Image (cartoon, rainbow, N blue to C red; front, top):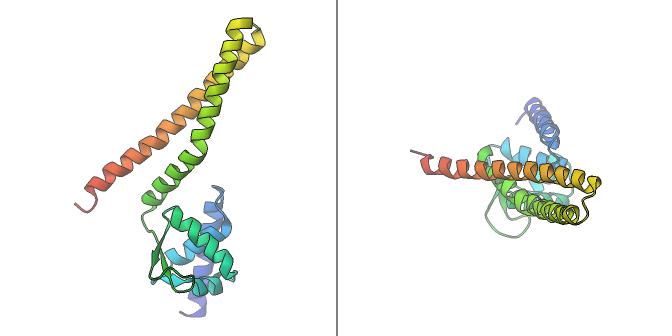
Length: 170
């Protein structure tokens, strides 16, 4: 690959990292994904470390995260340096995996905690009748409903994705 094409590719990888970074994704993770996505062939740790000018151990950690999120596929052996990697090109598939993982990790805990606090405050309001407790109960109810709506929306995306998979390739 000539120098100008490599430079263009690097600029695209950096732009992708900046755009995806908006969502709170680690810049090196995004660069690893971008390097793999824009590569016409699978790459190994060493090639990624060289291209991104990053430590091999950092690349290894980022690849493990990307594999867990369904953004990168492992090809070949299991030892670092022996395996080759390629990017998942189906962005809907990646989004579905990320949403599911984050929903289970973050939304589930948040839903549970807000529901518990709502119940506690509502019970206290019933017993004490204080206006401040009524206000807090109403706000917690709104928050609870908003988070449940977001959760249902995320679940709906998963349902759409599974339906999409039924018709893929037909």
